[in-house]
Length: 128
Image (tube, rainbow, N blue to C red; front, side, top):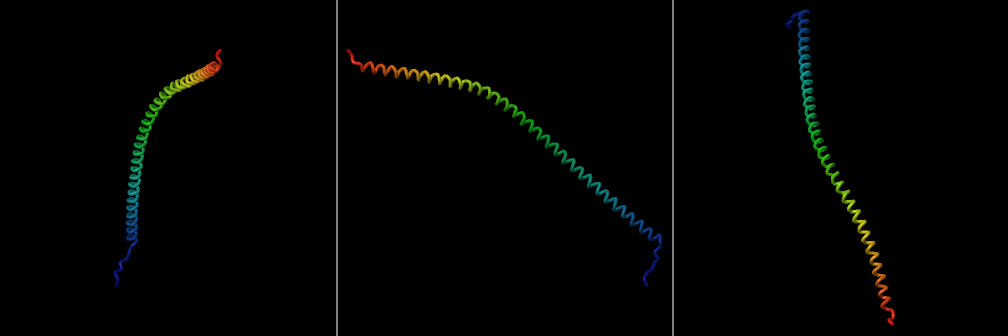
C-alpha cells in the first residue's frame, strides 16, 4: 500500500503560509524591478532634458551670432544706402546738365544751320 500519511490542518496552513511568503517575495521583486525600471526611465528622461538644454543653448548662441551679423550687415546696408543717395543726387545733376548741354547744342546747331542757309543765299545773289 502506498504511504498514506495524514495531512493535518497545520500542514495545510504551513503550505499556505509558504505560498503566501513566496507570492510576497515575488511581488517584492516585481515592485523592486518596476521601481528600478522607473528610476532608469527617469534617469533617461533627465539625460534627454539635459541634452535638449545643451542643444537649445547651442541654438541660442547661434541665433546670437546670426543676430550680431545681421546687425553689422544692416549697418553696412545703411552706409551703402547713404552713399547711393549721394550717387543718385549726382546722377540726377548729371542728367540735368546733359539735358542742358543737349538743348544748347540743338540751339547752336539751329543757329549754325540758319547761318549756313543765309550764307548760301547771300552767295547766290547776283553781285552788282
